[in-house]
Length: 166
Image (tube, rainbow, N blue to C red; front, side, top):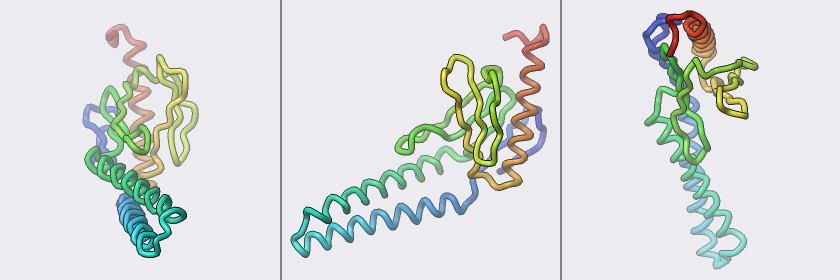
């Protein structure tokens, strides 16, 4: 987290996840790849590739998936960004995370706000979106929720006024 000033102002609010999360991803990457290589070496030395080989390959593949996720998360950091007109978060599949941006004017309804995420509906989409906020520290989570609600309210106020036309 780098900035929390201006709840509905033009100053963007940037949030980073707790360092322990990326540390755990790094440890999972290292142990998965090392464990997979160890299993493959053991299978090769004992000449029993069938029962152990596929497990070692799967473990290496899992480790590479976790490593890719970690690298992309670090490149896209901060994980949550609140701007005046929209907010962005890291979403997508585990093997291909990407930055997703949603305009506040496109939000039709906010269903639930939990400690792990915000469930909301976006115009032109059938399914609800889940914005993950569980990776933030408790203080950052509260600041994000307050800033999110303030900017949603400000956006709705602009939409209701005649000057707020697009």
